Every structure is written in structure tokens, then in C-alpha cells.
Length: 304
Length: 304
Image (cartoon, rainbow over all chains, first blue to last red; front, side):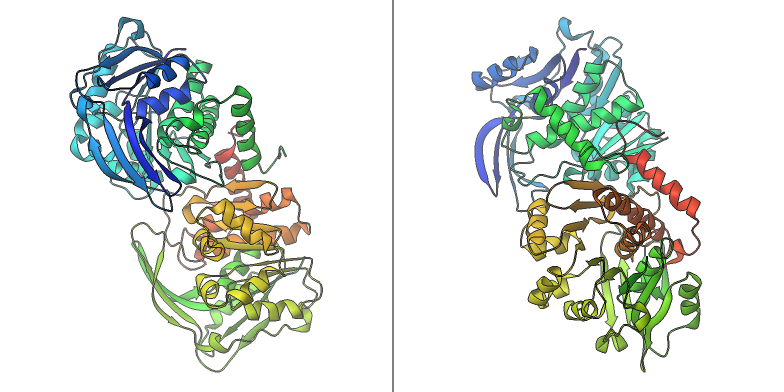
């Protein structure tokens, strides 16, 4: 089923202890779309400048991502520069140039309006609501956010939370949003604002999913080499939402399996710069790593 | 089967955001023995001073812990004072008084010498080897350690690692010991020193178990209220080794189930000060939380 994503498409310059790239393909909607493209029909809503390389557009088109919603505006593309230390757990932002992203007003093409699955990546919560108002009765909507909106547009964000089925945020954001150190309590508070499911991303420690009845914990895939964690959260969300859209059904079981598919995509993504770790995956590769998660977590019936 | 543990018995004064206790029952061997006592016959080796309260001895005896190896020496019992901040993830040590623990020389009573399962809790690695030399051909030996020995007695510690079947350490210690930030690589290095299994504790994020062939990841039980994390690692080790000793057999499957039983005991322990969270558990309660871990981690066949 069609999966709409609104977010950023950017040019990232990233340095890790293992190397560096300059103006590589990045942005939340890029990582999300690339991951989700292995599962379903993805519809991208974003903005780029006149300088955005054709090769990047060609890559996304090649992955089958629909681009009618990608605006090309006068000016330069959103740029982000950051670096990671030895522990690779948190990016230090060196420079952010919003450029055309600063005045981004998402306008959905007619061909997107019936999208049954919607992901509102990390943008201004007022724009997230703008997008939601344009889509016709979507079946399932999820959103992400970040500390900038939690502190700067809290009321608008809580309004967005009241309009979505699921929120996917990291642990620090969940704590800041709820004003609560304990994650179980933080999730409870966020659920009370409206979403039926809260997924908390914990980086190398995996994710926790809460729905007020049961909790699901998934580890991150243990890797010998994490090359660049940029986009891990968005790749996770892409695999998660892509799998749900593929199934066309959201249940306790599909949500758990979707979390694992998200974790699979994130694990591939962090093995290389930019989206390179997800450029040429196969269904067999994705399924093999999914079975790897069974082997990693089972303790009753061990599929070894 | 008999499970020998050598470690500390202490009086802990602990402050958390939720309260404080003064000179409460603590120490690695105490937490370990209490947790393990729900599974098997535990044999304690430790030292206390003349001031050690009879009520604490009575509690351990009441749990069925064998005490022939508990020395009572002239002087004061080992005391530790620490506090935790809001995040509860790391203790700040305010005071350590080794007292009688400083000159501790573990001497095994004859009744312990045939112990098939042995846990060398966090003490001087030379003393760990002393204990190992005294036990007659144990079936399975595991050890813990800490940064103090990693930096101060590295050669002795690596010798101990060469003599044990399994090591149970926290993530920071694993990184320091191996000189390697990536935990998968760190585990590989530690395995190369001798142990067939490496278990890395990650606090609120659970544990990873490595054996060079497969990796097992277990989450910590998500709790609404972590009251005092002191002794979580030792309670984990007690549940883990206690379960293995109860089964009398160490296989890939029993090790994974033992990790979950260790996680169950740690989750009960952190719900109260000292060993209070483990004072009066029932088999039914332990089994219920064990099944809770199935519900928490399953994504193929969900036991909801």
C-alpha cells in the first residue's frame, strides 16, 4: 500500500573515526524512503535547491520512490555538517544551513492524496499537521520529532501527537517531551496525548515499543563495525513503516515484526556512509538478517 | 548442584532520588547468594568484622545459604557509601572503607571443596586464582571483575580469564579490558584470552552474550520504578549461575535461559534498597516474570 513520507532531503558532510564524506545524499526523508522502498510504494514529499545533484534523484527513482512531491526551489539545498567521536553514539553538529528547507511548505500532489500510510518525519509540527490535513482519511499515521520542536513548539507538537496513531522518537526526546526520566512512565505520558503506540529508539541499545498493554523490546543488531550512524533512526522508521504498508494491516504481531524489519534496515544503513549501506540490498539479505534477529533474541525455541 | 561464591559482604549506605539507607546489607557475594538461593545450594565465602549484625546472618541462613566459609575477623566490616543521580545509571562513590576485607584470604572449608559450580565475584584476581586452586575440578567456573583490577592487576586478571569458562562484566569494563570501543570486537578479544562465554552487562539496556559462534541479546525488564540499582549486576550473576547449577548442565539453551533468570532476579533487586527486593520472592513470581520476558521479546509466536 502507498506510503507517504514528508521530511528533509539534504546534502550531508560527515566525519567519523573511519572516514569522511562531503555533500553526500542525506536527510530524514531520504533515509526513510530508501529503507521503505524495499517493502512498498513510497511517495516522497520534500524540497531541494537548484544545486541538488541529478544522480541522487536518479538513485531514488531507481529505487522506485515516487517523486511528484519533491519540490525544486530557487536557492541551495539543505546542508548539514557533523562529526562523531570514537563511541559513535552522538553527532556533534558543526554546521546547519537550512537554505530552501527554511521556507518549505509541503504541498501534496493529487496522486498522493489517497496514501493509506503516512510518516511525518522530523519537521515543524505545524507542517506535519498541514500534511495530515491534505491526506484523505489515511489508515495509519506515524510521526517523529526532535528536541528543537519539543522545546520550541511544544503545544503544536502535542496537537500533532493527538492526530497520529504512532510516534517514533529517541530516548532523550521521550524524556524531554514527557518531563520524566523513567522511560516506562515517559511512554505512558506520551500515550495519554493520543498515539496508540510509542516507539522509543535507543541507538545501539535497540528500541522499546509501548501500547499501554504490552511492551516489546528489540535489540540493535550487534555489528563489528558501525561506520556511520547518521540516518539510523530514519532507516529504522522506513523499514518499520514500509513493512506495515506492505502488510496493509497494523496489529500487535505486525507491529513487532515491523520493528524488527526497521532494525534490519538500520543495521545495514550504519555499515556505510550516506545511504550506501542500503543501496543494493536483496530480499534474501533482508530476510537473512531478520532471521538473525530471531537467533539473537530467542531463548525458548532457538533457531540456531 | 552446589554453587560456590567468593566475594564481598558489606554494609552499604546508599542515597537515591527516592530515599536513603544507612549500613544496609550489601556486597557482591550477598546479592549473588540471595539471588542464587532461589535456584540451588549456595556456598558463601567472604569475610565480615565483629560488628556485622546477626540479623543479616540470620537472613542469609534463612535463605538456605551455607555459611561455613564466612570468616568473622577482628575489626570492622567492609563499608561502602554511594549515591545515584536522577538517571540512576552510575553510582558516585562517596566513601569506601575496606576494613577486614583488605586482608581477606579466602580459605575454603572442606565441605565446599567439591563445588561443581563456582563464581568468583569482583575481588583481586590473585585471590580468584587462590580460590580456584582450592576447589576440586569444578564443572563450570565464572568470574566478574572491575576497572580497579583491569588497570591495576591486568596480567593477573588475564591469567584468571584463562582459567574460567565464562566472564560476566559490564560494558565499560569490557571496553577497558579489551582496549576496544566496539563491544563485538571487545568480546572477541576477551574470548581469545580463554573463556568460552563472555556476558556483557549494559545496565538498563540488558545484556549481550558472546561465544564466538552466536550472540544472544536480552533486554532489561522495563520497570516504572527503579528504586536502587545497587547489586543489579551481582543479582543478575546469582540468578544466572543459580539456574545453571540447578540444571547441572551448561548448553547454548540453558545459558540463554540462565541469562533471562539472571535478568529476572536483577529486575526484582532494583525495586528496593539492599536485597529487600529479593527477600521474599516465590517460584511463581519468578516464573511469571520469566514469562514476562517471553512476552517482552517475542515477535514470531507472541505469548500474549
